[in-house]
Structure formats: structure tokens, C-alpha cells
Image 1: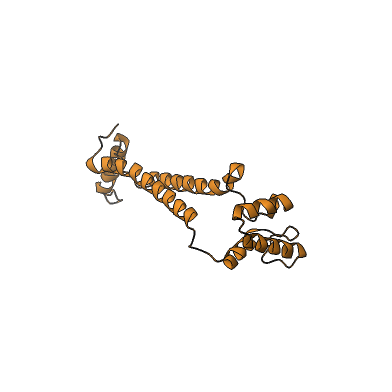
Image 2: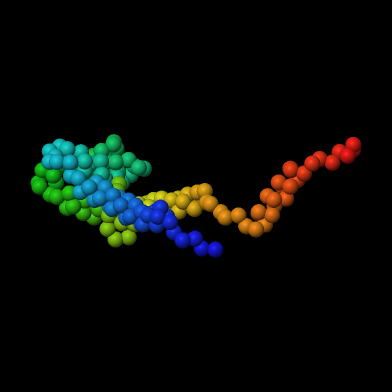
Length: 171
């Protein structure tokens, strides 16, 4: 049995794709703004501190160069300060440190090539999880179901039993 769509049902079918498109556009806009925000002009001292916090100590476990007291971290901090004073860009400083200490010196993985999956995959998983949850919850909602002929017969029998006079011992 097929039901003809009513006015609210057809509007609802159109609203769902528009809602998903709106959600996708909002997510892309937020990610774009978050990735392009530079926070204004920073001083050399602020830049040095930011760079120190973005590199890992090669001999410490999970510590940044800024937090580590190891001798190698002190050397890296000094090198970063010299490079900033000499006018080197962040990319040049990063490339020099990666060449000297390896990729493990980066606290944040690079956002290119295969490593870009580390940044993109959680967002994609979150979007698909939200879509899956929305689909599950929309299907789990209340549904109006037309009674079958068996349902009608069952209700009719129940009514007859209720309405029938009780047969007692004195009848």
C-alpha cells in the first residue's frame, strides 16, 4: 500500500537535503576561518615562543622544546631565536630543524600528503557519524500504521467479549 505524500511530507523531504547542505556549508566555513586566522601581528619574542612550543624535544617524551630542560632543547631554542633574528621564515626554520633532527621534532604533523589524513579524517568521521545518527533517529520516530483486517477482527472480538453478558451459575 502506497500513500500519496501530503503537503507537510513533501516539504519535509525537501527540507532534509537543504538542512544537510546548510550544515556542510557551515562546517566548511568554520574550518576555513579557523585555519586562516592569523591572530594579528606578533613580536619576535611571541614568534620565538610559538615556534618553541611547536617543536618536540628530540630526547624527551611528549615535551615541547619550550617545556624541556634538556640540553638539546636549549640548543634548539637558541637556534630558533637566531633564525628569527636573521629573518628566516617559519617554514625555513621548520625545514632546518626537520633536516637536523628528523620529522619526529614536529609536535604537529604536516598538513600535506598522507599526513593530511590526520587532520581531515576526524572531521569526515564526525560528519558521517552525525549523518548516521540523524538517519537512525529520523527512522525511529513514531509512525502511523494503518490497521490490517486482522487487527480489526481482533478488536471486534475483544469488544464482543467485553459487551457480552456474563454467564454466571444462576443463569
